[in-house]
Length: 337
Image (cartoon, rainbow, N blue to C red):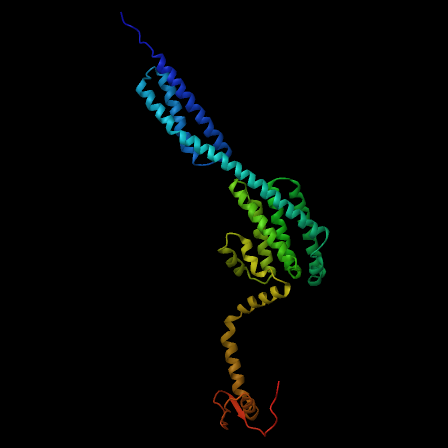
């Protein structure tokens, strides 16, 4: 008579305990990954899932032995570090959410206050009106109204994404206002720097939290291009200015001064486009010198040199040989300044 295979109840009980530990660990990893999307959790989860499958298969087949169970239990114990990693990831995710909420509230408060200053109190309007007139001013006012509407709508969403979009549009409006004279306002730089600081902080926290910044990025880039064109840059110069900058707003820093400073910089840019004409200009100037040599009063020059305790210049009827003629005149009183 064949004796039926006797099941080792103690091994099965131990296997059930190991399976329970592995399942609990798998749940922890799943929860942590759902909350954080931390890629470091993926291999740990796969390992825990593999242990669960092996224990179930061994229990169902009846081939479970003390030695095979010990090997499976060791695999589960290796996963203890994975559980710690999951806890660490969850803590980091909570910290990221707290920072995102804080940055969002901070940005919301700043943009709301600036909306009151610029749209309700019209703090930049006098500067804009001083430099912008007629149809151009009417077009600016329409854009101003559209910006105000968008900003208030986004602030009303009560979300980090809404606050971030509102902050971006406020930056775009300020660039538009600057291009039309608001840079003369002594408060412009202070407001711009504060807005930039709050927006950069919110952007960083959005990135950590895995939130999309696509709408902001698209709008700000377009606003920067329009601003740089208004400041006199060509399409090629704008493309070059944006090419090596991760943040398009870095390209506007040099042009955010007062209207006169920006105009001077724009003039410098315009002059740089004329560099190819330099040889022609140089030749024409040299030709004019040859046609009409400059005349210097030698006596007057010597009088000044003498007053300064320096040696006088020797006269020469032949001139200097550089298109300049030295003329000796009758003695007269030196010019004093």
